[in-house]
Image 1 (tube, helix red, strand yellow):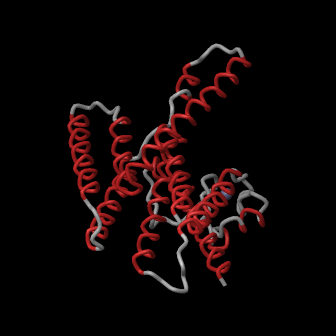
Image 2 (image 1 turned 90 degrees about the horizontal axis):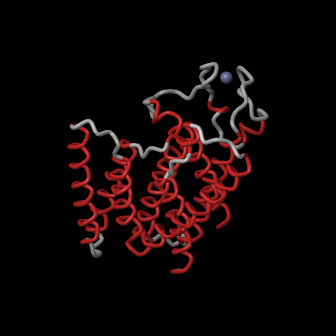
Length: 268
Ligand SMILES: [Zn+2]
């Protein structure tokens, strides 16, 4: 029977994955993500429920829009599968026993799935646009506040959370001050806020390794990019320069998700 639960979690993950692609596409464009019906960005046709079933709809339609035949990026399919796998791996690493339910563990599990969802959206938007979205960060802050209240009720040590939230508040104040002065370059502050949210969810230890892993991934990627560009021997244009900006939030989010799962496996 256990496999059935894991299957359900995987399917849940793919639905989340489908939501992530929608969020990553819509949030930077300022389109509502909850109430506006899903549509094809090419022909604007409203998508029916059957078009929204992750993986299945992509395969049955051959990766094309049912209405206009526009090719759907295979990246969407990959993200749905990836998100399903991450949810599945996290559930396995968390070793939650659904037949002998521990309510505390179940609540923590739900918080962590929402936190992973938050990281996915942060990573996706940062990868596409090199920006850490403020509204998504606010969702993360609200989530970590709720988590803190829960931790407080279930009487664990909470001072780390309080310190993190105070730091977040300070960063937000600095950020609004900078916005008033019309200094819109606040990527650094957003990264710091993201870091605080990460510490409050996964602890300082995991965050330390998250930073290390991110640095390794960034160096690796830069190295690969360097080899690619030196092969092309093209002069560096302005658009290339823009692409050379590093999506730090993306690397942090990806590393954090990996380490959460690894840490769980090691602990249990
Ligand atoms: Zn279409």
